[in-house]
Length: 164
Image (cartoon, rainbow, N blue to C red; front, side, top):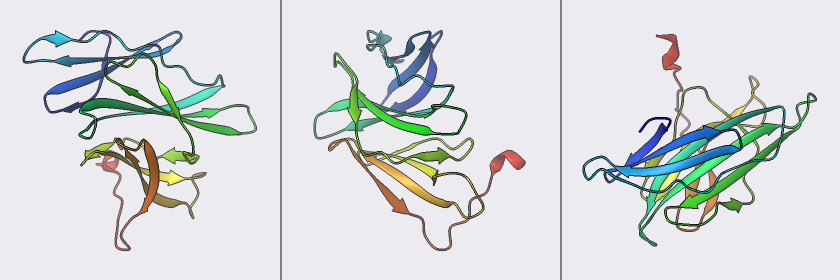
């Protein structure tokens, strides 16, 4: 679909995000049947001077719904104060829902989400990126619409594939 960036695919359903002046819109489509959903309501975040936004797409088997999770890390001012917001949209809903309790984080470059058994998972750096930063997995449970941090195995080694 023109104007949409592919977020993910699950069970043959694709999810795309389009950036508009007011924020973002999401659309779903099935390439095999050529069925396209209506656009979601507009997704907007707190105003700021800079923003990093991540999207994830998955299936919640408990409600039989496809869900999009949007996470925004917004720089509020030049003194690097930040605000993290997480919002969820279920296919067919009339609005985005705010989710509380998501930790402030910085993402690792070029690492997307992984959908696994009703959860969306991101490898992230907690807090500010320094030599002593802690790398964890942030896991969002699509049924409960909650998130938690998971520690990586002791022998985990991250390789930046952009170097090759």
